[in-house]
Image 1 (tube, rainbow, N blue to C red):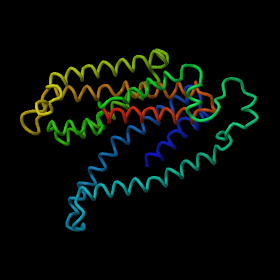
Image 2 (image 1 turned 180 degrees about the vertical axis):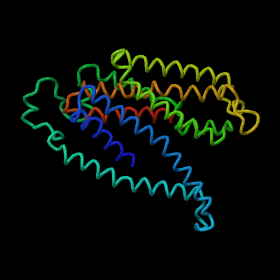
Image 3 (image 1 turned 90 degrees about the vertical axis):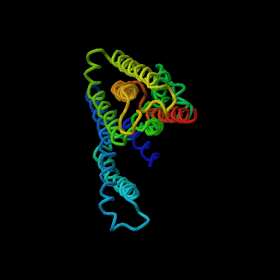
Image 4 (image 1 turned 30 degrees about the horizontal axis):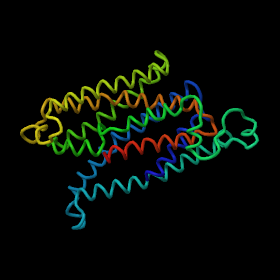
Amino acid sequence: EKFGTLLSDVSVKREWSPQLFDGEQLQQVNSKMSQIDLTTEVVGPFIAGLLITLGSYLAEWLPPFLGATDFGFVATGALNALSFGPQLALLRGIYRSHADFLQLVPAEQLQARKGPVPPEGAWGAWCRHPGGLQFLSSSYALLYLTVLSPHGALLTAFLQLCLVPSWQLSLLRGAGALLGILGTMGRPALGRLLGDRGADGLSVCWLAVWMLVALLAFQAAGGSDGGNIGAGMQGVVSMPLLVFMAAVCLGRPGLYSFELGVLNQEQELVDRRHRSSVGAVDAALTSMATVVMYGS
């Protein structure tokens, strides 16, 4: 599933969008796609919770080996599998209706173009691309070198150890995604007001400020000793821990605004020949940062 999602994401955002749209319209399309992605992060857990609740009502009709939680997992997996059909149909429809715009660059045009042509491979295209692309990709990947993600497994496990109720964890995930949507909605206007570089700089500074607040709240809550961070009784969250959770969510607009800015910049900066290669390297760098985070 992850592999297929990565392939379609790189193809649509890196290849198709810049060839079908340009300028202000392209940035608006990027913003809308990011909003859709984040909306599914809100709706998905809500639907999964409803399916688990439905499983508890249907317990007497379910097989003995299938509990309410198991029913929710199975139903969610089935819905996920069924969604690939409509996705494929939509992608094929777009390709058929815009095939003339989505063709690869002919070989004779590649030879006639000026500028660096990497010898081969995605990493070669990324390493030899001019314009400071490597710094842009690396700065984006480094933002994934963190556990402070509302939907991250490590943060969720830590908060569970702190006896944070499950409904508050759900609110944390939903609030992070909703605030991320606000960041993507405001990014086009912020770019018009401050310019792309100013908007991206402000977005990163916004994220950094709230991560600093989260760090201070974490220290005030008792440091890394999970037994002392939570409240004295289950269901009640201490004020420092509550501030910590709020700060993590409030940093999301800056993160997703910067992510959208990176996408806009790379679509303009990267040559059409190498957009998929650069997108694949970006995905690899963010995955490497995530692996380092889990392994540290």
